[in-house]
Length: 447
Image 1 (tube, rainbow, N blue to C red):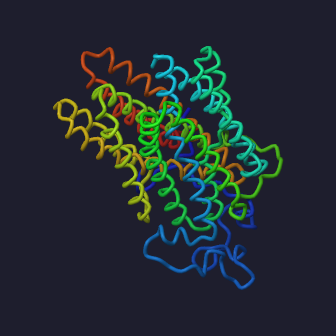
Image 2 (image 1 turned 120 degrees about the vertical axis):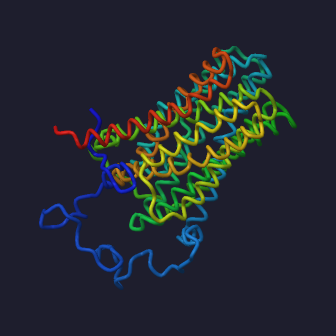
């Protein structure tokens, strides 16, 4: 049965308010919020002089400028961006490297898919260790092991080693930590008393994701073609290790370590299964759109045209960070279901220019949906388990991407025309909207 913790807000269905420890409740047990001082902040949260830790920073009209006045924010963001860029490079680099050596795109795709599946299974466990022992203590050795796996994969491909060694090496890379999730966890910790700033931070992180996924494949393809087939993997490994080391060195902004308790997994938090199911189906939108576009255009123009979708999402994410009152998840999904029909209509005309414009427009629905979903995950996850909660969301999205890639690819290949593949993204978005609406209905239904 859909979980009841979705509520109808003026902006549409939304999940229940964020997790709050019992200290934030009224001491009389009435269940209401504690008394608030000026600016809606708890007097107990103020410092010795009665000032909140976020007060005293210069006020800026631009919320992004204000965001990076937080002490230490620029340093950990720089390191994280360096570490996040290779995430968009590894897949393209390994496919080019393996396909060039073994003359088989099927083998290259299978090896890449195997790494994705194993990584999705191990990521929540790595994130749980990060919550329990600290980002620096876990992320650095986990990254070193993952980078060693990438280097072994590079050597195996270069030497044309037996195929099984490629699978063994790519599985060793599954310890790579979720760098985006760790960065979001830091923002959530630093801005726990400032919802507007948290919203801006989530919008920035989503825009950064889109930028890295837009530039990473382009950089990887350039290195592999201009230098040698293994250049993309080698550069990505060096950037990944360097970025994580820089990020982990910023200990002042690292969230506190969660005490060892018998706390349940965030997966069992009220409302989380319903939200993850929505994110799973939403991931199908992204996976199918990428594969269908590559199959439909089938040429060097496919990459730049597809990058326009990421560009649209990046721009929308930055704009979304200025919004004070964000819409509900259902509203974002409704917009996505509508805008994802544009590539289908454009493909039917046979015009590449119209398809490029349609992908740019459709991309504007991605970041707002992801930012809203990320914010809901943060609300449902206990503060001491933020890394695990964020990684569960990423795992759900990656699972959806895999399903969408397979479904979109099959339809593009077996349907009478590749344009039929563009039916998958709007259908998946509509299904995600239906799941969100069903969760709201479940809350209203009597138990």
